[in-house]
Length: 336
Length: 240
Image 1 (cartoon, chains in turn green, orange):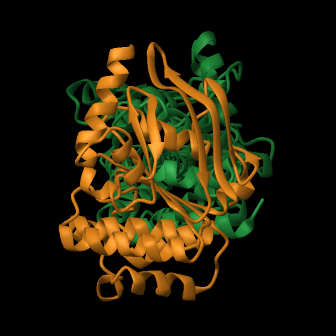
Image 2 (tube, chains in turn red, blue):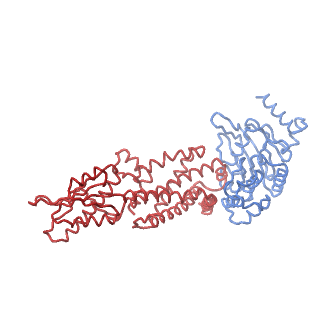
């Protein structure tokens, strides 16, 4: 192995992109744009939520205050209505996205106080957000009830079994954007490195430079390593920009090790470069190389857990998902 | 005289197409060998066999006594492909410097020298795709020359090159011969043939004849090389 030759190839790739501002913009601007858009959309759906609340508890106000505070933090609308019927009517009419009914414990004490959640349900995203928030409130109430004297009624049961939502990473302040941003970084890194490697390697072949490369003393391993190094630099630059957008523009909650994020980007780059070089040998021109996107990128995007969690997939699809590099990276990314 | 390239009955087929059908050659060092024949007669395939980028179906190739492909031989060989084979987005200097580094030449001196030689110094920082066709050919030749190879393989280097530049190319080739470089140059232009020390006439993947331009012409009593080539080709099809 000759390090000079590997560097020469890496340097050449970086230079080629520096002289190609349009592609450079594509790598940097597009992910930032898409990520901002996704973040904005996810948050704005959640922002427009309003709930109706009926308080039937024996000690009115205690649970309601918690709920009010949580909703106020999320910027949601809250309307306190006197009766259950009125709340349900509001949900049916579409005036509110859901109703929370705080039920009292039976007078004989056989049942505990209960939180019932009625969802409008036509927008799964909103439903999910409501469920998440209400279960957080129940948890908070449940936790606080532990510190209260025993005669105070314990709350925290019911509400469609939401209480089991114990956060390992993050916690109540994590929202959907926080969950989706890290896999998106991996997705973009993979997408662009794969596409650009496939196209540049194809150009090497059709432009005759690959033949020239092959008659120099450079070994194949040096060429591939040079490619990885060159694209690795680009991918890391991209990751830095995306992370900055995520942290500064989207205000994502961030806990974890930055170094680990870059390590993941680098391992992804290695996978994407190799896959790109491999598949580019099956393409005769650039259009054919681009045709590999639906084959390689879209299934990975769908199956790797960016949008749907792998556990909820049919078994055979789970097996396919396990074979994809992005799955692993997303797994680890969520771990970071 | 030292022998640069030896091929022994080398042949190459691509599926049913026999591109080269048993060529035996002996290329002496320090001379310019012209590989002559119509398009599609197997010149490019033969050059690739000598480079070692193609594996022969039959026969053997050795360069400086080493069987190809050999990394040691490659580091002393320069190759200018038929298509320019350059990174179009990079400047002339970046292209030449890139190939220089692949050949282990770190210094900028070699690069500047060869750019000077090819009269490219003025436009060295322009991206290659903004240069004229003739300039691109010069950049391509510069990339093949930058590591001062002992053996230079040029695949139709003067296609689409104006007469003034073509003359310049040939004087470079002769200067390189003086310095001890062996050159194999393919062409389908007969008037270039007279400038070679020795000629190899090819047709349909076969070597028709080999010798100095004078020898080839005199042997068949032709008045021009073009006529000589036609006579050799006729004789071949008469046999076949």
